[in-house]
Image (tube, rainbow, N blue to C red; front, side, top):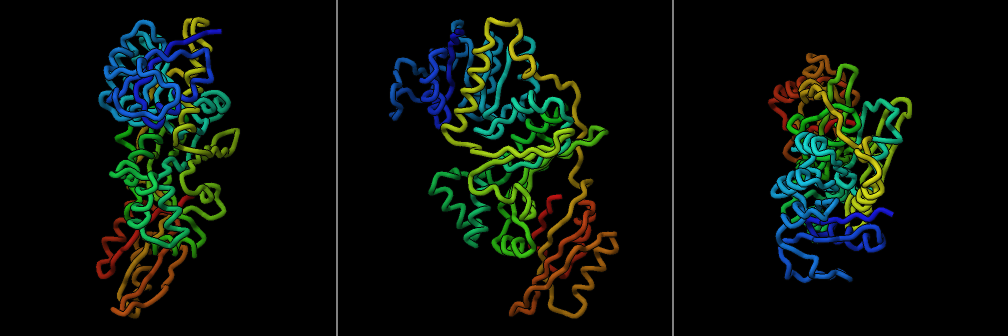
Length: 419
């Protein structure tokens, strides 16, 4: 039995779960754990304080350590620590989606140079097995499309807005009180977290490098409870979807934004903090993987799985787990959001006057935009009307031109509709 020595950088929620889980695996020896504050009280049974250090360099340069487990998060100092670890001959297991999205190319190249492997199953969807299946079981497929719910905080907020009929602001406050949302929720609610994840996921699935700066991102802060109610009436649910498509010419449309999803679609039934990834490829068709996308033990499950995968290969082969090495020599060609084609839900407040609906229809027709439906729900005391439009597929830049021409109206919401 191989026995690997590891160092863990970070002992927060995920790091604690990794420590607790590894107690069941005698083939893994924890040599050191780097923390910010050695004297911080920690309710972790069996934790020997002698393992703790506040100097992570003791881990990344330690010649006895085989695997460095980075679960501290953020770019600095994690990026430099991972680089140093690779240069010192360590394999890497990380849950750091931001580093992979922003610096993956450099780190994977460095790993190849030093004949080491970086595993990151926990970085995309927590406890959902995803990267290894794509690299192995689904390797015989040409994957062309991904639709995913990759952030539990936003999915919780949107679910509660839908089920309870309350505002974004009210649910966010509740989510923060329950610990589902950070004090500063920007990374989640503005779509950064999901954008980091879809960047790496699309790169792996498509076999072409997707650059984070080319991923379109839009959060959920503008979604109103009125939009939730209208979506339900029209047969939809609103979800924050991380999507990626690639065509035969290597053009990759990768983005994160709210979408209206048909109620009979699989992702419409993914609620609260659950994550799900819908992968479409040939010949498999469509596969849906769902489960806990975050949390102490679900994420630790993926981290420990990666540790054990490396341990099983050490000293057996000159290059371990070759299928997990990065071999993306070509960049995908990014598609600008203005050039994409989508269906659109548009909520409009307009003067309650004869010909207003005809005017909206004419503006759209002049842009060659067909309307699937146009509905006036109610008239307000100020003599304005609530009008909802659903378009057929059309180009994004034309929708923007339509909005500019609706000068006498207030456009409350524009939400893309999932295919």
